[in-house]
Amino acid sequence: QVQLVESGGGLVHTGGSLRLSCAASGRPISTYDMAWFRQAPGKEREFVASITWRTGSTYYADSVKGRFTISRDNAKNTVYLQMNSLKPEDTAVYYCAAGYGTPLHVDYWGQGTQVTVSS
Image (cartoon, one colour):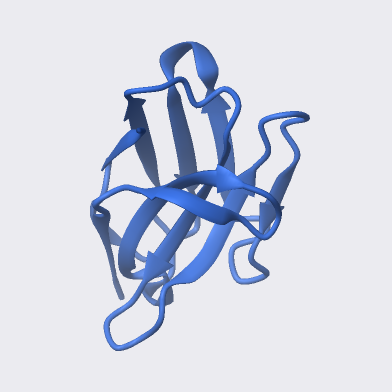
């Protein structure tokens, strides 16, 4: 079992930045592909970014390319999402996920952290 706990969400103005963290426990994440998803009110959960365990390759939704960066620190068992140039449409609950494949087959979800971008 892998437990994932997100942190770093909050309220930020348009154009601001936030860094989300996802701390894992229970098992090392070094052999898991990791990803971030988000869900806005009234909308389905959507893919944001992922990073593979084998090569560290990264993938992004078109809506966040060039603004968001996913990274991982296996020594700290933590995954990050650096979010820059935030827009009101980025407002959502952000979830960390662990699994395999691209697109990610999710085995474990975090509980989510709220990100609110004010205009």
